[in-house]
Image 1 (cartoon, one colour):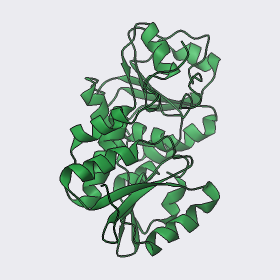
Image 2 (image 1 turned 90 degrees about the horizontal axis):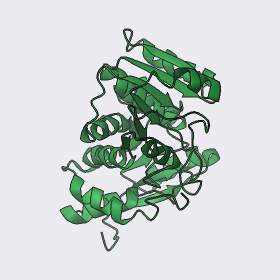
Image 3 (image 1 turned 120 degrees about the vertical axis):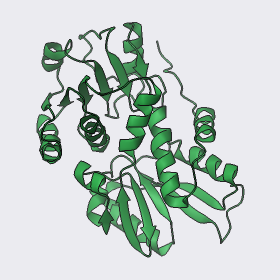
Image 4 (image 1 turned 120 degrees about the horizontal axis):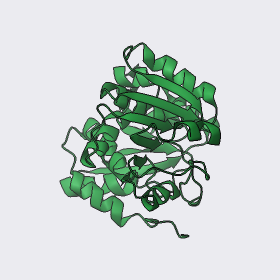
Length: 294
């Protein structure tokens, strides 16, 4: 909205950093479209200040917040209630503050699946590799297992963290084929022909480090594999650029951002999210649609 008043309902984003985020553009455009007296504000919060920031939200009568890197897992310990899916995933990305209590949700799960389906990528039966083992990876693996993929291999720089992720999910999906390994050149080389879908859930390649890529430099990408990056700034990361050069289908991170945001919007406001308006606002606010270097 154009004017913030004393009557304005406030929501926002907790993360470190948050300067790159398109969430304020997306949500404020949606509020304007529906004529709601609401505003969305980015809150840069250092990891050491998370507890104090959450207490401040209640004091300031904030309605809710999105939670992004690096707080998605750490924020869980401060919740009064957690949705079943968020509890299973072990990560919260949306908080609704009701009567002074924090209610944690994970809208990344629905957002991720909606983005895949929108891109004409049906996950059922696919062999999938997930790069990373943080909060976004947890939501993606939950969504994939729920969608009955053939298998998921979680590759992370610290393999033990990937193992912990599997331990947290295997009881919920006992029939799923979940594996883990280190994100190294030898491990990727051994598995590179075994995937139908590869998903980068790490922040490697996010602006301003646009030339970084989580896929090992000497391992070729496959034309018959779909490559998805959850990063949306830039829209075409080095990871996706390499995949596209190999002739592969690519899926950028904008769809997940929009769809998870739409679910959060509806949780807070009780109104149907204007998804088309949200997408337009994101595209208009995205200064780094492509990498600056070839």
